[in-house]
Length: 319
Image (cartoon, rainbow, N blue to C red):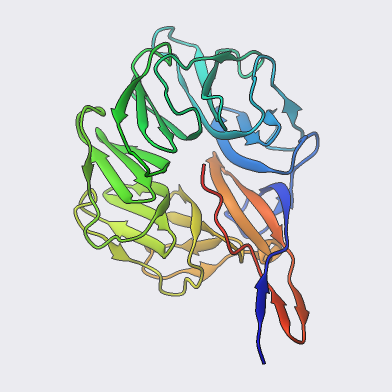
């Protein structure tokens, strides 16, 4: 008997857990699009980047408000919130978009301004702040700004390698890409590939102490020496593509293509499915705010026929 593998995916917005993932609740009231790609937190504010711009919640996702004034692009793939180093006491919110580059808001998303001077590839998949340095990862390069996006220069000409994620620890800046992991120890002046033992495309990065975790198209990998060497840590983890990682205290959460959230309490030595309401969902992004844990989910519909098995999603969204 032959089997045909198909996909049937419905995006389902944001879910919330207040008990470390034991139970989950949909929190989508006022969210204009269920196609949510990224989350960012700043104080009591939670920002969601979606196919229809940016939404803001100040009550842990109970209610959302659209904040798109001046945001020319609709699809927002990356968000980063940080203190404004030039104006102490103020905050900056950066949005990376699909084809329109980076936008800046200095008033919690009430208004936005395009900041793309020097950006040559405006499909932005990842953003991160390191001190006063802002890094943007695109489909072909890493860009760096030292003045809140007023000007950019090419920090790493990635060529055909899509940059998907960043992580920062003790002056080390890591970039995940389709070709593995890059490391800069000099604020983006130079980059070195650190992929010994890692031959996978990297979709997400997370750091806990000396542990650097990479979510890949072959599960989760761990490096304890700043990427010099890597080992797969997938005991009990049955899903290949890992789109998102998040760390809360001693808990490591992984969001794969389907089967909801996986949890490790021993730095990836072993994993357990930690879902309840999420067993038929794919996780696209994860965020932790205080005691609040929020994943962005797509609902996966399983339909079985005598000669057809529908599973999903079998593909990964690249930002």
